[in-house]
Image 1 (cartoon, helix red, strand yellow):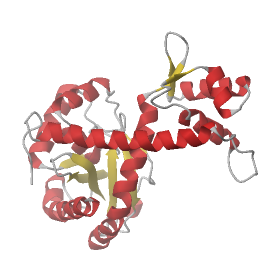
Image 2 (cartoon, rainbow, N blue to C red):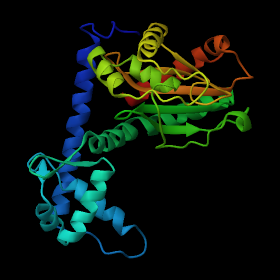
Image 3 (cartoon, rainbow, N blue to C red):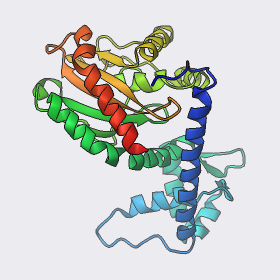
Image 4 (cartoon, rainbow, N blue to C red):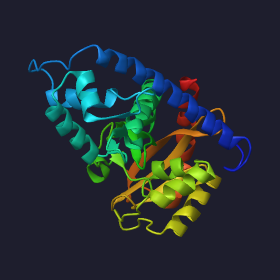
Length: 298
């Protein structure tokens, strides 16, 4: 059932409460891993994994609520690595946007690093219960179906099952963990539309509306108007906005308070259905599948 408008009393607190619970779970999980990192060395390379990756992850895991900022010496001591090695990996993580330095030149995690943990939690909670529903939806339609969640400033694919009808015309060869822009994807527009107004305004201010397809919306005012239409219709349509020759339709997977936990999408080549036909042909099946995923999550 659709809830009150974004600024209404029912929707925003529910969204914030849900987000708070996810963040609390993520913090607890990270603290446990940090405790383990403090008492063990970074594993030696046995040829079965990347030592560079293990160093980088160990550095990220060394931050916690008690130590939100760390210097190079702190990280090196905790992980029993040399300071030169620690500095090299910390600098790389900062360049990639996962760490930043404060005025004292101590490092701290960025929102992008927190986004990794939140995405992992959302993936665990949603992807496995949703898989059977996605498979059934693909069997029913023969089309490519996708499930995505909101990242820091992008769309994160949790799952994507490639269809067999029109595959050669519409396949973008994307897989789980792929990231896509929010403003020119049907799933991204759904997730933006269901954000509480203050969060939506903040995110829209930060977004760069790069043109990807012939019909990409590149103006902030036009995008806000589109998001209002998406919220009113309870679905979004992407018409050659991400890539030429591709149309998609997406609906929200709603939580108990009316927040969008995820978005569910079907993609087709433009020659198969017009923009106006997408809703009638796929809308009911998508909404039914979204309701099943939401019920399975509970």
